[in-house]
Structure formats: structure tokens, C-alpha cells
Image 1 (cartoon, rainbow, N blue to C red):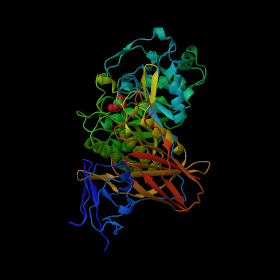
Image 2 (cartoon, protein in one colour):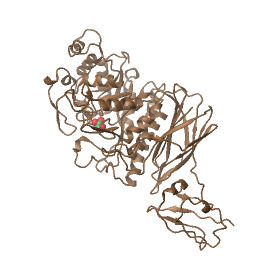
Image 3 (cartoon, rainbow, N blue to C red):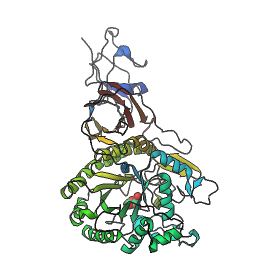
Length: 571
Ligand code: AHR
């Protein structure tokens, strides 16, 4: 008779057995690395004692030489399946879903990517760090949102053009009350975007500005002919207009942008956009309404109802993954409890965009108006000893999980989400780059965004996922998220994330048609969830070749370690 035993790994990392009484006993034994290959979804291991990959487990049974098979209570592998529908796909994943955000906040701009054109120590192009330009180019950064955030509704753009020594200093009232000299202004930002090959996304000042001021900004940046503003631009050294396409009409108008009610903001929006261009979305402008916070569906409904569709290019929404606003917890050294809560918050994005999109569908069934998630990311307590107003936080594998999962959500909603911006680019919140004087490091979030850039402007291949759960303290979340696309050269890419803190996932991926001859992939993971890249150890976490995928016909079997992101390429 076959003897079976199941072995559980307790939180302390010890095995418990529940084999037949008095029949089999296994020593309690600290978790051994090898065991991970044997984990299944219920924290249960299966193994054949003859094949034990470790020597120290003592099996005290007289008939030991005779038994050769342990049958476990549940199967070895998880039951996660991903089906990729390759036929009839037509939705393009806009590259602008992979956008970034640079606010006048802490050391994002000043002391971050902008060192000033007089810097002798840090190589720069017109004052912008060259190493950061190179890193962002490698990311294929598609657009950059500026100058805020909350800062946008305090910013008067005319203070930031013309000779730098004549520009007035201002106090950044939202972020640390610091005085800044306006040396990074419109020319600096738009020239930087040109250098990056990124589309600029300017947030206009509605809260404390005027419709005239915003309309002047549009004329300054975009008008080729003779006009007061274009003449001024030319006098300031720029002959050709930049042709800025994306314009935000204020930011968080419900809060730092003016504490407005949605009905009032809808009217303001109509007024501001009228003077920016015209009644229609002509002139190449995409005008984006300041959107809801999280689940404020009334905000979206009110804007959609009260703003004529032809005046509206996009409606924004902001969602941060935060534990509690007054007790956000550390960016590193967090507990699994804190991790799970952040994963819950990150998964909430799926519900939020689904519900906001459903409201938009009522008023815009043809999906002409974009849902613009122009602020997203993880938000924790600032690093000890840093200015609380500067929002400087480290970036761990937890952030890589947020990024991978969120970008999968965005890809899968590409029919409605056409712009998104991670908050923020450098040294602020879930940054892709951190700097320390002349040093610069790339965060795990950077690596996820770089791995995922294969999806930019590719055709979305819809996926159906049946995933195991990530269970924690009687709560559960889907463990695996995925998205797939086919690029213009015919390559298919599949991105997979396993957020489970402890368990690997074996995933069966089926493609409903299409023949693939080769598969390759890259993985981002680390030893601990709390791991991060530091200035001392800048490459602790970086993508590596992934060898855990096997292609047979139209099916791929993937072994996804705990807290990992994998991008596969099939050809
Ligand atoms: O990204 C930081 C801040 O978060 C932005 O300024 C604001 O829009 C949001 O509340």
C-alpha cells in the first residue's frame, strides 16, 4: 500500500507533517532552498522520498527501502491557466500607457534630472543629466507630464521663460515650502522632451490661473505664425513651435486644484478649453479633464454628462496604492501584512478602471474619449531623515509587483485607457530612477517598465486567466496577472506577474492559434521581497534570462517563482 504524507511549511519556515500516525515521521527542518521546486498552491509539498533533493530529512520507518512514492493531498503544480486569444485582435496598446510624470516636487527636477547647464561635475544636455536621458530613452519613455500635480495649479508659466537671471523666485507651497528659482521652465521642459523623443503632457493652471494664461501658453508653445506669444518665444530663442498635443486642464480639481465640485469644474473646463483652441478637438490638441480620485464615480459621471464630447479628449483618474494616508508604512523593511495590503490596493486599479470606463461607455460608446490614469504608483512613508514634503522613498520588489500588475491591467483595458503616468519619474514616490549627487541608480520599477516596453503600440491579444489565489490571513487575491500583445514584426509578447510572497506558480499558457518556433524570456525577481537597489549595490535587482518556460506546439508551461515578473517573447 502506498503511504502518503503531506508537509506544510509554517510561517516560521518549519515543516509540519501529517502523515499516517506512527507510520512516518519527518524531522522538523528549516526551509531548504530546494523545497521551492516542490511547493504547490496550498503550501503543500509532494516528493518521492527516493528522489529527495536534500539529505537531512530523516524518515524513520522500518519499511523505508520499500516505499517509493508519496502521494500528496493536492497536485504538485498550481492550476493557473492563461489562454491567449490571437485571432481578430485589433486594439492597439497605446505607447502612452507607459508615460511618466515630473513634478516640481522634492528632488525630481531640481537636484534630480535637472542639474543646470552650468554644472561642471555631471555631464548634461542643456542642464538635464545625460545618464538620465540615456536611461529614459532606453525605457522608450513615450510622454512626460509636467509641471504637476498639485504644483501645476500654482504655477505661472510666464515666470519660467526668458533670461534665467531675470526669472522671479517662487515658493513651492505644496511641497516643502522651498524657494525655487524657476530655472527649469517651458523651454527646458519641451527641449528635454525633444531630446528624449517623448511627447510632452502639460498640466495647465486652472486653480489659481486664468483662461487667458492657459490660452497664451498654448499659443507660445504651438503657434507657428506671428502673434504676441510666438514672437516672445522666438525672442527667447525658439523659432519653431513645439506642437504640444497633450494638455491637462488643471489637476485634482476636487482637492489641491481648487476644492471644486464636479459641476463647477465641468463649467470651468468648458471655459478654459474654449479659449485654448476651439469648440472641436481640432488643432492637434488633446484636452484632458482633471479626473476623479479613486472610486469617485460621481466625478466621472458629472464630467461625462456636462462636457460635450467634442471638447473632451480624455478624462483622468488618480489612484495610489497606499496602506493608510496617515500611516503609510516604510518603503523597505515592510511586513507581509503591509505587502498584502499594498497588493490589494494595486489590484483595486482593475475595479476602478472597469467602473470608470463603464460610465464613460454610457456617454461615449464609440470610445473616442480616453481614460487617462495620469497618476499611479505606490506611496509610503518618506525615507527616515528626508524632508517629509519631498516624498522620497526607496523602491523594492514590492514596487516591481505593483508596476507589473498595473501595466497588465492597463494593457488589458487599452480600448479605453490611452495615457497613463507613473508617479513619479526621479526621486519621488515610485520612481524609476534615484540619484545621489553624481550617482544614479535604476529601480526595480524601472526594470519592469523597460521589460514591458515591447507592448508599446503593439496589438493587444486578449487573455483569459484562471489563477490560483495568493492567500494571506483569510484573505485572498489573484496571484497571477498577465497581458499579451503582438508587435509590428509579428512577435508575440506575454507578461506575467506572480505576486504571491511565498509560492511559485506553474502556469499553462495556451494560444488559440498561431505557430511558434521559438521562445525566450526575461525575469525580474530577487531573494527577498524587501530587496532594493542601493547606491552601494546598484545592480542587486536587474532582469535576467528566464529559463522556466517550455514551448510545445501552442502551449507554454511556465514556472513563475514567488514575487516575480516575466516577459516572454514567442516567434
Ligand atoms: O504625485 C504627488 C501628488 O499626488 C500630486 O502632486 C497630486 O496630484 C497627487 O495628490
